[in-house]
Length: 399
Ligand SMILES: NC(=O)c1ccc[n+]([C@@H]2O[C@H](COP(=O)([O-])OP(=O)(O)OC[C@H]3O[C@@H](n4cnc5c(N)ncnc54)[C@H](O)[C@@H]3O)[C@@H](O)[C@H]2O)c1
Image (tube, rainbow, N blue to C red; front, side):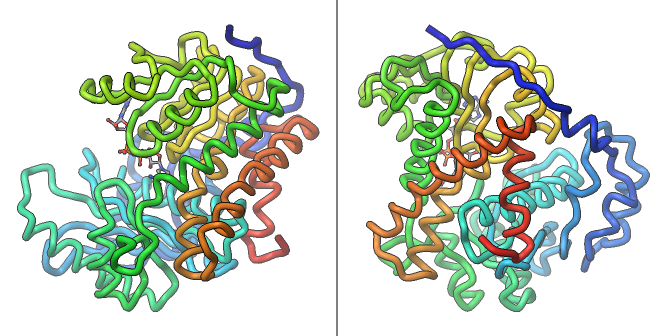
Protein backbone atom coordinates (compact mmCIF):
# COMPACT_ATOMS: atom_id res chain seq x y z
CA UNK A 1 0.00 0.00 0.00
CA UNK A 2 1.45 3.37 -0.97
CA UNK A 3 2.02 5.80 1.91
CA UNK A 4 0.38 9.23 1.99
CA UNK A 5 2.45 12.25 1.03
CA UNK A 6 3.20 14.91 3.65
CA UNK A 7 2.90 18.59 2.65
CA UNK A 8 5.56 20.96 3.93
CA UNK A 9 5.72 24.62 4.68
CA UNK A 10 8.15 27.30 3.51
CA UNK A 11 8.54 29.51 0.48
CA UNK A 12 9.72 27.94 -2.73
CA UNK A 13 13.14 28.58 -4.26
CA UNK A 14 11.39 29.52 -7.48
CA UNK A 15 9.52 32.28 -5.69
CA UNK A 16 12.74 33.73 -4.27
CA UNK A 17 14.90 33.31 -7.39
CA UNK A 18 12.95 34.17 -10.52
CA UNK A 19 13.94 31.85 -13.33
CA UNK A 20 15.54 33.44 -16.40
CA UNK A 21 15.51 32.33 -19.98
CA UNK A 22 18.93 31.78 -21.60
CA UNK A 23 20.29 35.12 -22.75
CA UNK A 24 23.71 36.63 -23.39
CA UNK A 25 23.78 37.65 -19.72
CA UNK A 26 23.16 34.08 -18.66
CA UNK A 27 26.13 32.78 -20.55
CA UNK A 28 28.67 35.58 -20.26
CA UNK A 29 29.91 34.28 -16.92
CA UNK A 30 31.45 31.32 -18.74
CA UNK A 31 34.93 31.81 -20.13
CA UNK A 32 33.99 30.46 -23.57
CA UNK A 33 37.11 29.32 -25.39
CA UNK A 34 37.56 28.00 -28.90
CA UNK A 35 35.52 27.20 -31.95
CA UNK A 36 32.44 29.27 -32.55
CA UNK A 37 32.69 30.81 -29.12
CA UNK A 38 31.08 34.12 -29.98
CA UNK A 39 28.62 32.40 -32.32
CA UNK A 40 27.61 30.20 -29.43
CA UNK A 41 26.82 33.11 -27.20
CA UNK A 42 25.09 35.14 -29.89
CA UNK A 43 22.97 32.25 -31.09
CA UNK A 44 21.88 31.65 -27.55
CA UNK A 45 21.06 35.28 -26.96
CA UNK A 46 18.82 35.33 -30.04
CA UNK A 47 17.18 32.03 -29.30
CA UNK A 48 13.51 31.98 -28.43
CA UNK A 49 13.71 28.54 -26.89
CA UNK A 50 11.38 28.22 -23.99
CA UNK A 51 13.59 26.13 -21.68
CA UNK A 52 14.05 28.06 -18.45
CA UNK A 53 17.48 28.18 -16.89
CA UNK A 54 18.55 30.04 -13.77
CA UNK A 55 21.39 32.49 -14.28
CA UNK A 56 23.54 31.02 -11.52
CA UNK A 57 23.29 27.64 -13.18
CA UNK A 58 25.84 28.63 -15.78
CA UNK A 59 28.36 30.20 -13.49
CA UNK A 60 31.18 28.13 -14.98
CA UNK A 61 34.91 28.67 -14.84
CA UNK A 62 35.38 27.54 -18.43
CA UNK A 63 33.44 26.28 -21.42
CA UNK A 64 35.52 24.93 -24.29
CA UNK A 65 33.81 24.37 -27.62
CA UNK A 66 35.98 22.90 -30.39
CA UNK A 67 35.50 21.25 -33.73
CA UNK A 68 37.62 18.07 -33.80
CA UNK A 69 40.42 18.43 -36.31
CA UNK A 70 40.02 14.83 -37.52
CA UNK A 71 36.31 14.13 -37.05
CA UNK A 72 35.00 17.63 -37.74
CA UNK A 73 32.50 17.08 -34.89
CA UNK A 74 31.74 19.60 -32.11
CA UNK A 75 33.25 18.75 -28.73
CA UNK A 76 32.32 20.74 -25.62
CA UNK A 77 34.06 20.51 -22.25
CA UNK A 78 32.51 22.37 -19.35
CA UNK A 79 34.58 23.02 -16.26
CA UNK A 80 32.21 24.28 -13.62
CA UNK A 81 34.68 24.51 -10.79
CA UNK A 82 38.24 23.62 -9.83
CA UNK A 83 38.04 25.24 -6.38
CA UNK A 84 38.18 21.92 -4.52
CA UNK A 85 40.53 20.25 -7.03
CA UNK A 86 40.64 19.27 -10.71
CA UNK A 87 37.21 18.96 -12.31
CA UNK A 88 35.94 15.41 -12.89
CA UNK A 89 33.03 14.16 -14.97
CA UNK A 90 32.24 11.68 -17.70
CA UNK A 91 32.53 11.87 -21.46
CA UNK A 92 29.18 11.67 -23.27
CA UNK A 93 28.90 10.95 -27.00
CA UNK A 94 25.41 11.28 -28.39
CA UNK A 95 23.35 12.78 -31.14
CA UNK A 96 21.50 16.00 -30.42
CA UNK A 97 18.59 17.36 -32.42
CA UNK A 98 20.07 20.84 -31.93
CA UNK A 99 23.71 21.61 -31.05
CA UNK A 100 22.51 24.02 -28.36
CA UNK A 101 21.06 21.03 -26.50
CA UNK A 102 24.59 19.61 -26.34
CA UNK A 103 25.94 22.86 -24.88
CA UNK A 104 23.12 22.94 -22.35
CA UNK A 105 23.81 19.32 -21.44
CA UNK A 106 27.50 19.96 -20.81
CA UNK A 107 26.73 22.99 -18.65
CA UNK A 108 24.05 21.27 -16.59
CA UNK A 109 26.01 18.05 -16.14
CA UNK A 110 29.31 19.70 -15.21
CA UNK A 111 27.56 21.89 -12.66
CA UNK A 112 25.89 18.82 -11.16
CA UNK A 113 29.30 17.14 -10.92
CA UNK A 114 30.56 19.96 -8.70
CA UNK A 115 27.70 19.34 -6.29
CA UNK A 116 28.12 15.57 -6.54
CA UNK A 117 31.85 15.74 -5.72
CA UNK A 118 31.26 18.11 -2.83
CA UNK A 119 28.47 16.00 -1.31
CA UNK A 120 30.66 12.92 -1.65
CA UNK A 121 33.59 14.72 0.01
CA UNK A 122 35.88 14.24 -3.00
CA UNK A 123 38.81 16.60 -3.64
CA UNK A 124 37.41 17.67 -7.02
CA UNK A 125 35.21 20.11 -8.84
CA UNK A 126 32.75 19.31 -11.61
CA UNK A 127 33.38 18.92 -15.32
CA UNK A 128 31.90 17.13 -18.31
CA UNK A 129 32.60 16.39 -21.96
CA UNK A 130 29.86 16.26 -24.56
CA UNK A 131 30.80 15.21 -28.09
CA UNK A 132 28.02 15.62 -30.61
CA UNK A 133 27.74 12.54 -32.81
CA UNK A 134 26.43 12.86 -36.35
CA UNK A 135 22.80 12.05 -37.10
CA UNK A 136 23.90 9.83 -39.98
CA UNK A 137 25.52 6.39 -39.63
CA UNK A 138 29.22 6.58 -38.87
CA UNK A 139 31.99 4.02 -38.97
CA UNK A 140 34.21 2.68 -36.14
CA UNK A 141 37.07 4.56 -37.80
CA UNK A 142 35.11 7.84 -37.60
CA UNK A 143 34.40 7.14 -33.94
CA UNK A 144 38.09 6.41 -33.24
CA UNK A 145 38.96 9.81 -34.77
CA UNK A 146 36.47 11.51 -32.48
CA UNK A 147 38.03 9.82 -29.43
CA UNK A 148 41.43 11.15 -30.50
CA UNK A 149 39.94 14.63 -30.95
CA UNK A 150 38.46 14.43 -27.44
CA UNK A 151 41.90 13.45 -26.12
CA UNK A 152 43.40 16.57 -27.74
CA UNK A 153 40.91 18.82 -25.95
CA UNK A 154 41.59 17.13 -22.59
CA UNK A 155 45.36 17.40 -23.03
CA UNK A 156 44.91 21.13 -23.74
CA UNK A 157 43.34 21.58 -20.31
CA UNK A 158 46.63 20.91 -18.50
CA UNK A 159 45.21 18.61 -15.84
CA UNK A 160 42.27 20.81 -14.87
CA UNK A 161 39.84 18.09 -16.03
CA UNK A 162 39.76 14.28 -15.69
CA UNK A 163 37.20 12.23 -17.62
CA UNK A 164 35.41 8.89 -17.30
CA UNK A 165 32.70 6.88 -19.09
CA UNK A 166 29.17 8.16 -19.61
CA UNK A 167 26.38 7.61 -22.14
CA UNK A 168 28.01 6.57 -25.43
CA UNK A 169 31.47 5.78 -24.06
CA UNK A 170 32.94 2.59 -22.61
CA UNK A 171 35.71 1.35 -20.37
CA UNK A 172 37.63 0.50 -23.57
CA UNK A 173 37.38 4.15 -24.66
CA UNK A 174 38.88 5.09 -21.29
CA UNK A 175 41.87 2.87 -22.08
CA UNK A 176 42.46 4.88 -25.26
CA UNK A 177 41.87 8.24 -23.56
CA UNK A 178 44.09 7.24 -20.60
CA UNK A 179 46.95 6.49 -23.00
CA UNK A 180 46.47 9.64 -25.09
CA UNK A 181 46.01 12.09 -22.20
CA UNK A 182 48.72 10.96 -19.80
CA UNK A 183 46.27 9.30 -17.40
CA UNK A 184 43.44 11.84 -17.35
CA UNK A 185 40.74 9.18 -17.82
CA UNK A 186 39.43 6.84 -15.13
CA UNK A 187 37.47 3.57 -15.14
CA UNK A 188 39.63 1.58 -17.56
CA UNK A 189 38.96 -2.17 -17.25
CA UNK A 190 40.35 -3.69 -14.04
CA UNK A 191 42.62 -5.99 -16.11
CA UNK A 192 44.29 -2.87 -17.49
CA UNK A 193 44.85 -1.26 -14.11
CA UNK A 194 41.68 0.83 -13.91
CA UNK A 195 38.78 0.70 -11.47
CA UNK A 196 36.46 -0.86 -14.07
CA UNK A 197 32.68 -0.55 -14.30
CA UNK A 198 31.04 1.79 -11.83
CA UNK A 199 27.58 0.17 -11.97
CA UNK A 200 27.89 -1.92 -8.81
CA UNK A 201 29.26 0.98 -6.79
CA UNK A 202 26.51 3.26 -8.12
CA UNK A 203 23.86 0.69 -7.15
CA UNK A 204 25.38 0.37 -3.67
CA UNK A 205 25.16 4.14 -3.26
CA UNK A 206 21.54 4.23 -4.46
CA UNK A 207 20.62 1.55 -1.92
CA UNK A 208 22.32 3.52 0.88
CA UNK A 209 20.45 6.66 -0.21
CA UNK A 210 17.16 4.76 -0.43
CA UNK A 211 17.56 3.36 3.07
CA UNK A 212 18.19 6.85 4.46
CA UNK A 213 15.18 8.28 2.60
CA UNK A 214 12.87 5.46 3.75
CA UNK A 215 13.98 6.01 7.34
CA UNK A 216 13.42 9.79 7.07
CA UNK A 217 10.13 9.78 5.16
CA UNK A 218 8.44 6.51 6.13
CA UNK A 219 10.08 5.84 9.51
CA UNK A 220 11.09 2.32 8.45
CA UNK A 221 14.47 0.67 8.65
CA UNK A 222 14.18 -1.25 5.37
CA UNK A 223 12.19 -1.47 2.16
CA UNK A 224 10.70 -4.82 3.19
CA UNK A 225 7.00 -4.94 2.25
CA UNK A 226 7.11 -1.61 0.39
CA UNK A 227 6.03 -1.19 -3.22
CA UNK A 228 8.92 -0.06 -5.38
CA UNK A 229 8.76 0.98 -9.05
CA UNK A 230 12.04 0.95 -10.97
CA UNK A 231 12.11 2.96 -14.22
CA UNK A 232 14.94 1.57 -16.36
CA UNK A 233 16.18 -2.00 -15.98
CA UNK A 234 19.74 -1.38 -17.21
CA UNK A 235 23.10 -1.90 -15.49
CA UNK A 236 22.24 0.00 -12.30
CA UNK A 237 18.44 -0.38 -12.27
CA UNK A 238 18.55 -4.16 -12.35
CA UNK A 239 21.10 -4.35 -9.50
CA UNK A 240 18.96 -2.07 -7.33
CA UNK A 241 15.74 -3.93 -8.23
CA UNK A 242 17.29 -7.32 -7.53
CA UNK A 243 18.69 -6.25 -4.18
CA UNK A 244 15.37 -4.73 -3.06
CA UNK A 245 13.41 -7.81 -4.17
CA UNK A 246 15.83 -9.96 -2.15
CA UNK A 247 15.18 -7.71 0.84
CA UNK A 248 11.43 -8.39 0.61
CA UNK A 249 10.17 -5.35 -1.28
CA UNK A 250 7.49 -5.75 -3.96
CA UNK A 251 9.44 -4.55 -6.98
CA UNK A 252 8.02 -3.69 -10.41
CA UNK A 253 10.26 -2.58 -13.26
CA UNK A 254 9.69 -1.05 -16.69
CA UNK A 255 12.10 -0.51 -19.55
CA UNK A 256 11.74 0.57 -23.16
CA UNK A 257 13.61 -2.62 -24.02
CA UNK A 258 10.98 -5.40 -23.69
CA UNK A 259 13.65 -8.12 -23.92
CA UNK A 260 14.68 -7.34 -20.33
CA UNK A 261 11.38 -8.71 -19.02
CA UNK A 262 12.73 -12.26 -18.74
CA UNK A 263 15.81 -11.09 -16.82
CA UNK A 264 13.49 -9.32 -14.37
CA UNK A 265 11.40 -12.44 -13.81
CA UNK A 266 14.50 -14.48 -12.92
CA UNK A 267 15.31 -12.12 -10.02
CA UNK A 268 11.77 -11.86 -8.66
CA UNK A 269 10.94 -8.50 -10.21
CA UNK A 270 7.49 -7.96 -11.77
CA UNK A 271 7.20 -6.27 -15.18
CA UNK A 272 5.04 -3.16 -15.26
CA UNK A 273 3.43 -1.06 -17.96
CA UNK A 274 2.92 2.65 -18.53
CA UNK A 275 4.25 5.51 -16.43
CA UNK A 276 5.09 4.16 -12.96
CA UNK A 277 5.38 7.70 -11.62
CA UNK A 278 1.62 8.11 -12.05
CA UNK A 279 0.82 4.76 -10.37
CA UNK A 280 0.64 3.84 -6.68
CA UNK A 281 4.09 3.05 -5.31
CA UNK A 282 5.85 3.90 -2.08
CA UNK A 283 9.18 4.45 -3.82
CA UNK A 284 10.08 5.29 -7.41
CA UNK A 285 13.64 4.62 -8.58
CA UNK A 286 14.51 6.66 -11.72
CA UNK A 287 17.22 4.56 -13.41
CA UNK A 288 16.81 5.46 -17.07
CA UNK A 289 17.53 8.84 -18.64
CA UNK A 290 17.31 12.34 -17.16
CA UNK A 291 14.42 14.80 -17.24
CA UNK A 292 11.84 12.40 -15.77
CA UNK A 293 10.62 15.00 -13.29
CA UNK A 294 8.85 17.92 -14.93
CA UNK A 295 6.42 20.28 -13.23
CA UNK A 296 3.59 18.23 -14.73
CA UNK A 297 4.88 14.78 -13.79
CA UNK A 298 5.88 15.98 -10.29
CA UNK A 299 2.36 17.33 -9.82
CA UNK A 300 0.88 13.97 -10.80
CA UNK A 301 3.38 11.71 -8.99
CA UNK A 302 1.70 9.32 -6.52
CA UNK A 303 4.67 8.00 -4.55
CA UNK A 304 6.18 9.10 -1.23
CA UNK A 305 9.88 8.76 -2.07
CA UNK A 306 11.87 9.26 -5.28
CA UNK A 307 15.49 8.11 -5.25
CA UNK A 308 17.58 6.72 -8.07
CA UNK A 309 20.78 6.91 -10.11
CA UNK A 310 19.53 8.75 -13.22
CA UNK A 311 21.47 11.98 -13.69
CA UNK A 312 19.59 15.28 -14.10
CA UNK A 313 16.22 13.94 -12.99
CA UNK A 314 14.74 17.42 -12.70
CA UNK A 315 13.77 19.08 -15.97
CA UNK A 316 14.49 22.31 -14.09
CA UNK A 317 15.51 23.17 -10.53
CA UNK A 318 12.08 24.52 -9.59
CA UNK A 319 10.61 20.99 -9.84
CA UNK A 320 12.38 20.24 -6.52
CA UNK A 321 10.01 22.78 -4.94
CA UNK A 322 6.95 21.19 -6.52
CA UNK A 323 7.95 17.83 -5.04
CA UNK A 324 8.70 19.31 -1.62
CA UNK A 325 5.44 21.25 -1.58
CA UNK A 326 3.58 18.01 -2.28
CA UNK A 327 5.41 16.23 0.58
CA UNK A 328 7.28 13.86 -1.74
CA UNK A 329 10.77 13.06 -0.46
CA UNK A 330 13.07 13.42 -3.45
CA UNK A 331 16.74 12.55 -2.96
CA UNK A 332 18.87 14.78 -5.21
CA UNK A 333 20.43 12.56 -7.89
CA UNK A 334 23.81 14.17 -7.22
CA UNK A 335 23.75 12.41 -3.84
CA UNK A 336 22.08 9.14 -4.80
CA UNK A 337 24.23 8.48 -7.86
CA UNK A 338 27.63 9.31 -6.38
CA UNK A 339 28.72 5.71 -5.67
CA UNK A 340 30.39 5.29 -9.05
CA UNK A 341 32.52 8.40 -8.88
CA UNK A 342 33.44 7.71 -5.24
CA UNK A 343 34.61 4.25 -6.31
CA UNK A 344 36.74 5.63 -9.15
CA UNK A 345 38.39 8.34 -7.04
CA UNK A 346 38.99 6.08 -4.02
CA UNK A 347 40.49 3.26 -6.11
CA UNK A 348 42.38 5.20 -8.80
CA UNK A 349 43.50 8.31 -6.95
CA UNK A 350 43.35 7.86 -3.18
CA UNK A 351 44.70 4.28 -3.16
CA UNK A 352 41.96 2.93 -0.87
CA UNK A 353 41.14 -0.81 -0.93
CA UNK A 354 37.69 -2.19 -1.79
CA UNK A 355 36.58 -2.37 1.86
CA UNK A 356 37.55 1.24 2.61
CA UNK A 357 35.94 2.31 -0.66
CA UNK A 358 32.68 0.53 0.19
CA UNK A 359 32.60 2.32 3.53
CA UNK A 360 32.96 5.65 1.73
CA UNK A 361 30.07 4.72 -0.59
CA UNK A 362 27.89 3.75 2.40
CA UNK A 363 28.55 7.29 3.68
CA UNK A 364 26.09 8.50 1.03
CA UNK A 365 23.34 7.42 3.44
CA UNK A 366 24.64 9.80 6.10
CA UNK A 367 24.82 12.69 3.62
CA UNK A 368 21.26 12.00 2.42
CA UNK A 369 20.00 12.06 6.00
CA UNK A 370 21.74 15.42 6.53
CA UNK A 371 20.21 16.85 3.36
CA UNK A 372 16.68 15.65 4.12
CA UNK A 373 16.82 16.76 7.75
CA UNK A 374 18.08 20.21 6.78
CA UNK A 375 15.36 20.49 4.10
CA UNK A 376 12.64 19.60 6.66
CA UNK A 377 14.09 21.89 9.30
CA UNK A 378 14.42 24.92 7.00
CA UNK A 379 11.27 24.29 4.95
CA UNK A 380 13.23 24.23 1.69
CA UNK A 381 13.59 21.71 -1.14
CA UNK A 382 16.14 18.91 -0.94
CA UNK A 383 18.00 20.54 -3.81
CA UNK A 384 18.34 23.79 -1.92
CA UNK A 385 19.45 21.92 1.20
CA UNK A 386 22.06 20.02 -0.84
CA UNK A 387 23.52 23.26 -2.20
CA UNK A 388 23.45 24.81 1.28
CA UNK A 389 25.39 21.87 2.69
CA UNK A 390 27.79 21.29 -0.16
CA UNK A 391 28.11 24.75 -1.73
CA UNK A 392 30.83 25.94 0.68
CA UNK A 393 32.77 22.69 0.12
CA UNK A 394 32.41 23.06 -3.64
CA UNK A 395 33.88 26.54 -3.29
CA UNK A 396 36.95 25.04 -1.62
CA UNK A 397 35.82 25.57 1.97
CA UNK A 398 35.75 23.11 4.90
CA UNK A 399 34.06 19.71 4.49
N1 LIG B 1 26.37 3.38 -14.42
C1 LIG B 1 26.77 4.23 -13.49
O1 LIG B 1 27.74 3.97 -12.77
C2 LIG B 1 26.04 5.51 -13.28
C3 LIG B 1 26.59 6.46 -12.40
C4 LIG B 1 25.89 7.66 -12.17
C5 LIG B 1 24.69 7.89 -12.83
N2 LIG B 1 24.21 6.94 -13.70
C6 LIG B 1 22.96 7.24 -14.38
O2 LIG B 1 22.00 6.25 -14.02
C7 LIG B 1 21.14 5.96 -15.11
C8 LIG B 1 21.20 4.48 -15.41
O3 LIG B 1 22.53 4.13 -15.70
P1 LIG B 1 22.90 2.69 -16.31
O4 LIG B 1 24.37 2.59 -16.29
O5 LIG B 1 22.07 1.65 -15.65
O6 LIG B 1 22.40 2.88 -17.81
P2 LIG B 1 21.94 1.73 -18.81
O7 LIG B 1 22.04 2.35 -20.17
O8 LIG B 1 22.64 0.45 -18.55
O9 LIG B 1 20.39 1.52 -18.42
C9 LIG B 1 19.40 2.45 -18.69
C10 LIG B 1 18.14 1.64 -19.04
O10 LIG B 1 17.07 2.57 -19.17
C11 LIG B 1 16.27 2.15 -20.26
N3 LIG B 1 15.48 3.29 -20.69
C12 LIG B 1 15.85 4.34 -21.45
N4 LIG B 1 14.83 5.20 -21.59
C13 LIG B 1 13.81 4.69 -20.89
C14 LIG B 1 12.48 5.12 -20.62
N5 LIG B 1 12.03 6.28 -21.12
N6 LIG B 1 11.69 4.35 -19.85
C15 LIG B 1 12.12 3.18 -19.34
N7 LIG B 1 13.39 2.72 -19.56
C16 LIG B 1 14.20 3.46 -20.32
C17 LIG B 1 17.24 1.61 -21.28
O11 LIG B 1 16.61 0.71 -22.19
C18 LIG B 1 18.24 0.88 -20.36
O12 LIG B 1 17.90 -0.47 -20.17
C19 LIG B 1 21.60 6.86 -16.26
O13 LIG B 1 20.87 8.06 -16.22
C20 LIG B 1 23.04 7.17 -15.89
O14 LIG B 1 23.49 8.39 -16.44
C21 LIG B 1 24.85 5.77 -13.93
